[in-house]
Image 1 (tube, rainbow, N blue to C red):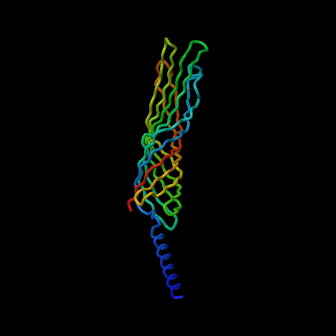
Image 2: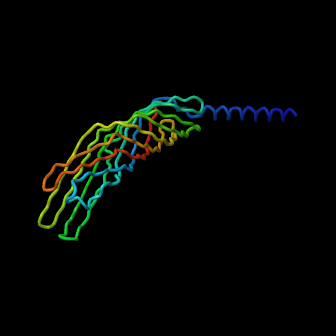
Length: 239
């Protein structure tokens, strides 16, 4: 009996120590952090306003914009209460590019090469609130806030009949404002390194450009300055 009692006491003590050790190892999300990431984007749409009737009769009235690039730098702060984590994050996405092009050979009369290109390059800044639920080292979160971008919009069109060539091009640079929202997942690989995957939808003010007239007449192009950024990155906490 005494031996059984001693064994039970030892087992209870061991379990208590293990349980206490497991609880003490619960990950703490509270504190400042900085991070960097890489990703890509899908864009919104560009629309075009041409002189009519004229050379541009076969050109598209709209083109979807495709994205690439988008390295990012971020800083933020988390505060944890139980399983819930709240905080704020500011980040900068560098050289996010949205673009598309159109090309066609028209053989109905004189063979003519026609082309149209549109490109928008954004240096995007966001300031967002974040909120989520932590499961020890795993955090599921949503985020939303304000966005601003230094944006350059470029458009050009060209034709070539073999004997006659012409083009028109234009560029504009503006500061755009809007909002951003999204969500993601973050996991603490180590106490001093966390990996993150997130998707952010941004919607900024429209941007337009008018090309310079040459042999070709000028036209207007407008981007709705929208897109979805998907990226992965590393966050370094400073607790």
